[in-house]
Figure (cartoon, rainbow, N blue to C red):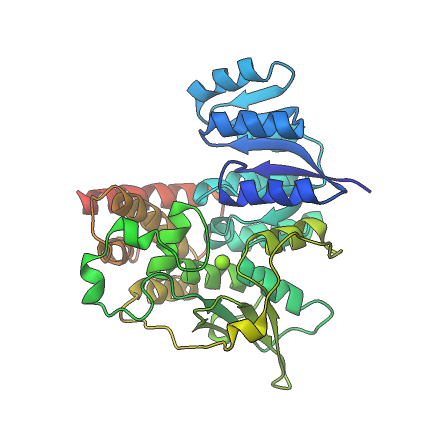
Length: 381
Ligand code: MG
């Protein structure tokens, strides 16, 4: 049986690796592709995989894609990804859009009853309650593509509800550095991740440990486990991708080389497990696996995200929005590394008392997101 995959964010790191997996896996086909602005790569991908349904958010790039792909249906401009999801027949939507902008695509996929391979963790961070409820109502499966959540998902197959989840963190490029040593780090240093090859936004999030914080919120929603039962453990080798602990104290872990192709292939082939062309994990060559407590003082973003997750309601939305603005400003040299946490904390403090404890609608999410972005921008200025 052929499975048709609609890839949203095809020109990003996850999208490119998903296309590698599809090209190596008989039975997987491209149903359609969506990108933000990289029209050159999008055109090349559509030609190579024969995609007839395409979307590009950037409108000037839209006309270039249309003339290069006269046979395809090309959508562009605001709402184009939603249109692509609504009008393209497919078995799985892979949502690899970056940031809170991915929520619209998640909602569209769920509304149309499409199984969702979810790499866009922000969908769950800002709207976890909504998304999980909608998935349950529509009978849609959410297949995690984040490596930690894929690991937990794999460990839980055929198992009862776990007592505890352990999310592993590589520690990023600044593992072991003190707050003082972090004062002068540059975007280039933050982007030099020792283990994982990823897009710029998530690589900076890995350096601040905000990524792990967002993953705690993601895990809380995906697996229905309380915040007190989710722990982060630093594991610099990135071989144990996460662990679960059951009532009897027994733990299960999933191990593999650090490659996003593994969780992508697992989600796309689920419930089957098919070959992936990849180096094998050589445990004897590796020698040992080490684990450490995270340093919450040097990496305050982890603490801030745990607090926002516990508060729930509007807090994770504001946290995520302020972080997206702060990371973009760090990458362009407007603020220093440690100011990322400062901007996020000040945004949350300024909104204290104004954030709802429960979210009533998607419009409410958009409004909180908008306010937090404006506030973070003003703080940066
Ligand atoms: Mg991850």
